[in-house]
Length: 483
Length: 94
Image (tube, rainbow over all chains, first blue to last red; front, side, top):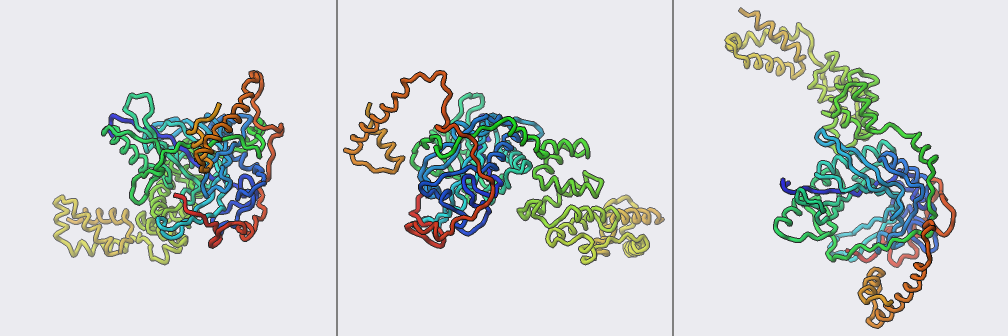
């Protein structure tokens, strides 16, 4: 990133709401059903049908608005957004245009120890479109196959202000937003399944310039990493164009994960003209203060409250508290561990370190893992009572992760018992000292490395099972007593 | 006032209609007449009138979030011109 330019980013996030049924009909929203088995004349856009709004959608939208510090105007309505595409059988999407359910909110993010407030322009309710499946080679097949199961699944579109100034800030916003939606219980936020999707609006301007540069919109950002990389790529592309005197085109681009670059999606510069107009088939909503208050009263603990609790009650560093509260599952896991084990920082270290590494490696969420809080606690206790070393514990955790077995079973089956018997260790130590008189002399003449040699030999002889703290103590003792 | 030919072409493109040159001229006048008629609304003073969001003064009509059986797939697909493997089959749009 060049020092002379700044990148300006705004994000549009689509979150699928956690409802049993679609937004305007009673078809199921369950993921992964056979194509076109969860549709009816309403969601498939047959002529003459009438949509009826799912109340849960409004409840969840209000919940989201409160979580994002929004105003909830007391009247809102739906509008038709008109466009032709085979994934939209009505040739319009029911959305909200000029009177959305939530406006003027914000979200605070933390990047490199600094807190920054990102404005939320609006949150509105809308229906999802169907899914197009391309059979065979997309470049040669003359057909697309249409599955309308996803048609009519309720979505919230959350639009930020263009307040972000780096890819890291955009990522932090996205992570925080995901945490908020998860804690508020409004969405599953599974990026891979598409229940949380993100488009990024990116522009670049010389530092000090007030007007925004030409912006492009990037679609198909299916992961936090894709979001970060795509913004970095796009910002660099803009800067290069500006420096080279090229004119940037306002356009929609797609992120190519394989080639790690953005590509133009629409060749013709056909301005979006959705001809929004009020949806005559749906009645406006009046949202009373009592309704909003009843939702506020039932609010669950949110990430920031949880962070405060972890820092103030358990003395965890801010950083730990932030990581542990990225998802409600992660916080619940921590809380469960803490009920059975008093040392918060040790739990946190293992969750953020080794356990997290295994989760990332396998692209899993904590809730999907076979490791239970009780299992992790049992493992920690086995370290404390000297049964296993910290190093062995890493192996045990890997095995717990892979098999779901409890630590006791793994320790027994793998013969992972730490040797803490002084007699046994002393016999080994004496033996190794006796067979290496030269190294003993080195040690006596002050060569520290010689000590490491002996310790290494003991670990080797016991296949890593000797209690390292005890070995060090006994070895030092013995060597110092040799005349 | 008639619409310009360019405006007619734009609206036709959005509606996926292909028009002959004669039709464009005719529609520019007809659409213009419709807009003029609608413009009479602008002559009415509305300074102290609340904007209307719907012609009915009914609000908050909801459905409970309870699953009902969907329509059988064969019935849903019965009117589709082309079907394959449980999908609607349509010309590819790129």
